[in-house]
Image (tube, rainbow, N blue to C red; front, side, top):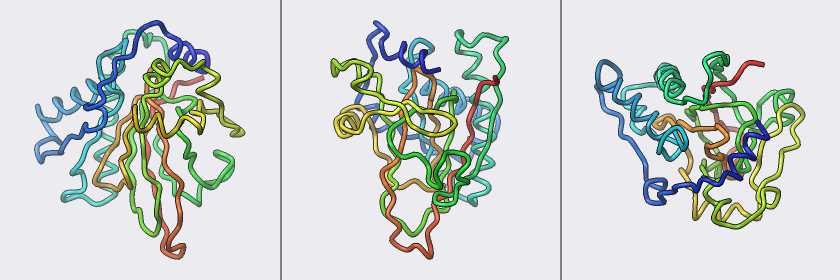
Length: 249
């Protein structure tokens, strides 16, 4: 995956970046989106946005709002899980580069910042700098409960578009995380402000009213969050429900 990501950054194909669309894309969930033709149309719409070049003309992510209307946190997670499974099946069928003999699986986790088992990532806290995961094709995030803190603003960055227009060498723009298990490609800190303002989007503090789908392939996006400051440690909670597709082996 490391070599594939470097190849994507160094590709001679110019990245198409629509700043207006990238910074504003939002879909308001409707009551009939859970079933029938409306659900199928929603799945197509998510995939249209996720599939970046050369698989499509999407921007690499899709944000759903209004998920909490009439739903508890658990119900939003269930809806996200079911929608994610359908999105993955359609995403894979569209991506001709994903050979049929390759094996993938969907993993689902619920983690709480500050209480993550240290054996997973080497820290009790989720990784915040702008990065792409080591082994992940697409993922979805649902946050909540989220209380008792400042910061933690979720963001996405089209790091390839930034890289191609900045004139930087690969090692000037990116480094690798020092986690014990799976190293991540990480945007160097000195590039964060220029990249997030010119080629990214800040979503603020997320809650379970929103479901965020992200393309994490080598041609996908970088994600992260700003640092968290626990304003009320006794009432602090930042829980993340995540579905992710990983390749076996």
